[in-house]
Image (cartoon, rainbow, N blue to C red; front, side, top):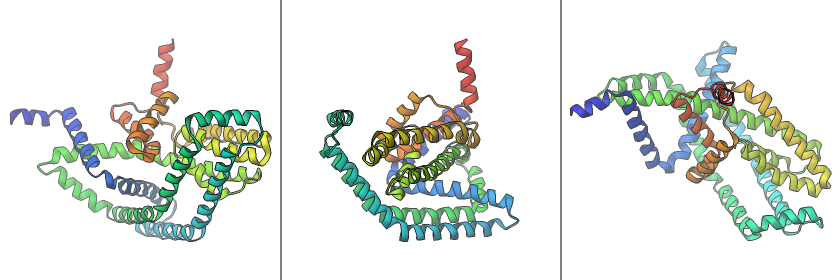
Length: 344
C-alpha cells in the first residue's frame, strides 16, 4: 500500500501510467477510432472557427455555432447531392486512363524504361488489385458518411455543452481517481495544443494547395478537375510523401495530353506550390512547428501506415509532434540552435 502511494506521488510515474491506460483504452476500441478522430477534428476545427468569428462579430457564441453547423450541413448536402456523383465518375475515368496508359505505354524509350522498371515492383495485376481496393473504400462511402454525420452531431453537443463538460471534469479531478483525471486533462491539453494545431495547419495547407492546383491544371487544359482537386487535397494531408505520390498521376496525364512539355509544366507547378507551402504558408500558419528532418518524416510515415493504415499517413506526424511536445521539445528554433551548435 505504501509503495502504491509513493508511486502516486511520483508525477512522472503517474503520467506514464495514465498514458498507458489511455493507450490500452484506445486499442480496445480501435474499431471506433475513425469516429473518434472525425469527432476530434470537427470539434477542434469548428471550435477554432467559432472563436475567430466571435472575436470579429458581436454575436452570441451559441448563435454563431448554430449558424456554422447549418451552413456546414447544407454545404455537405449540396456537395453530396451535386458533386459526389460527378467526382465518382471522374475518378473512374481517371483510373481507367491511368491503367490504359500503364498497359499501353507510348512508343517512347524513356517512358517505356520507367514503366518496365515499375513492373518489376508492381505488375498490372497488383495495380488492379490496389485499384479494386480503392473502389471497395469508395463503395463504403455510405458507412463513412454515417460516421461523419454522427461525428458532426457529437462535436455539436460537445461545443454546446463545453462549460458543463468542463465542470464535470473538475469534479472528476477531485474524486478518488483524481490523480488519473488530472494527468488525463494535462495530456488532453497537450494533445490539443500540439496535435490539433498541426492537423489544422495540414488541412489549411492541403485546401489552399488543392485550390491553386485546380486553377493551374485548368490553365494547362487538364480534364477531370474535380477528381484531381480531391486527389491533391487528400494527398496534401500527407506530409512530404503526398507531393511525390501526386506527381505520378499528374505527370502521366500530362504526358498523354502534351508530352514532355506538359510534364515539365506540371513539375514547375508542383515546385512552385511546394515552395509556397514551405516558405510562406508553413511559417505564417505555425512558426513554432517542429521542423522534422526528411528521413525522420519518412520513417514516421512508414510506421504510421503500418500501425494505423491510411490514417497513419495523415496522423503520424501530428502524433509524433505531440510526443515531442510531451517530452519538452517545443519548437524548430530549439532544434536549429542545437544543430548549429553541433556544427561549430
